[in-house]
Image 1 (tube, rainbow, N blue to C red):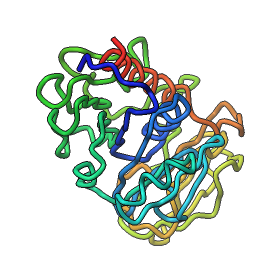
Image 2: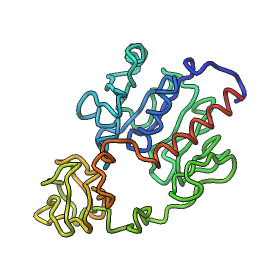
Image 3: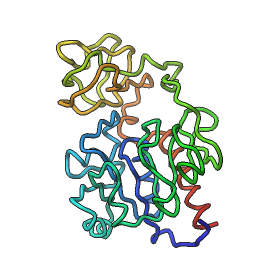
Image 4: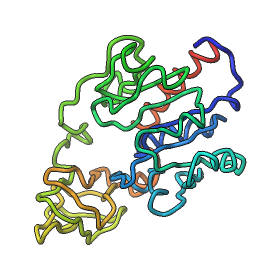
Length: 270
């Protein structure tokens, strides 16, 4: 992993296009790397306004000035790179890596477990969050839990286990998260960026209302019309009342992206 390569020659395949994955893609793209994203057929990102996976539904999307364009197959990836954009492929198992031959593979699915990533899938494999062990699943792991070690590049062991409790924002944890009260199709009454009062109805699932647990700004909300299961996270209310935060990459995503960038620099520019 100590081979020296110019940044513009390094190809990075990122599995996942949610908000943390998109923060990584955005930072690496702006740092000059050739970035490609693979996604599932029906992604359910909550922070859709800053998630490149929206290109699955829309064909193309933009996050803070960087464009992602959905590609039909791996042959279109170099053409999209030439345009200065990030190609996105619907490729749940990242089989396109065989054609793309990435130098770096980043598992940013955040499934809390390994869904098939192996150290042999690229010269450098970096995994985000719990469910991975350095050496067994990846060459490096990046910590995703809020706190003192957020964004740290781990060279042994693994990230802290998932507690199931959201990170604290102004002392608020579970009450800021919207969860599905039932199985069914999600129907929304609100949009990302809307102001909410505690108890206000955000949407419905099978005639069961989803209500905000706090006053705040609706920072994230999954796409309407998608089947959801009971208990699934479907939205995020931010008590800081900063509407701009809905449309900009979070400090958490940028911290994690910094850990990934450090890992690549250690491996190829060390």
